[in-house]
Amino acid sequence: MTDAVEPVSKRPFLYIVVCACGIASDVGKLITAALERQWDVGVIATPQGLGFLGTEAVEAQTGHPIRSAWRTPGETRPLPPADTIAVAPATFNTVNKWAAGISDTLALGILCEAYGMGIPTAVLPYLNSAQAAHPAYRRSLDQLREMDVLIGSYAPHKPKAGGGADRFRWEEALELLEAKVS
Image: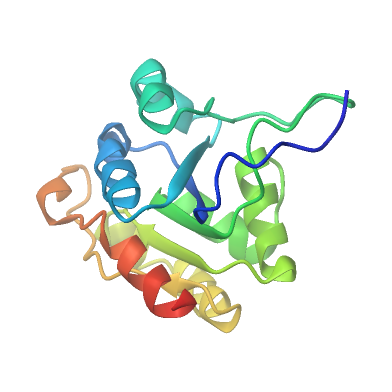
């Protein structure tokens, strides 16, 4: 087997990294918006995030398998290389691990490598205000900004309440990336 993947099209390829939180099941909104903008899409889920997705629906919508685990040696790459990456929704855990350079999952490995590869990346954090108040989170956002990661504008929701899905602007990831790559 080969590591190469035949190009699906000449359209830009967007990886959407999805983390484990209640609104992750709405990732189809971002996929639809990207497809309407003539981007091809592949989804990378954190191991916990995978359980929040309707796998069959997402795979049917993108035409690609959801990736969540590392490939085995010799296994064909199921997705073409990313031209851009959107992390949406991004949890407190993922933001902090990514900024610290921790690469213990496929999703984090891709994000950590994206910086060194110069791949434009946008993140839409989704967390509560108690998590957002933690000093590590503020430092992590500063670190990501230093890495040229584009950060969305979502205002954290109340602790133990969830919510805010109606204020989560999935399309903001594309707006941020389009401004960077155009």
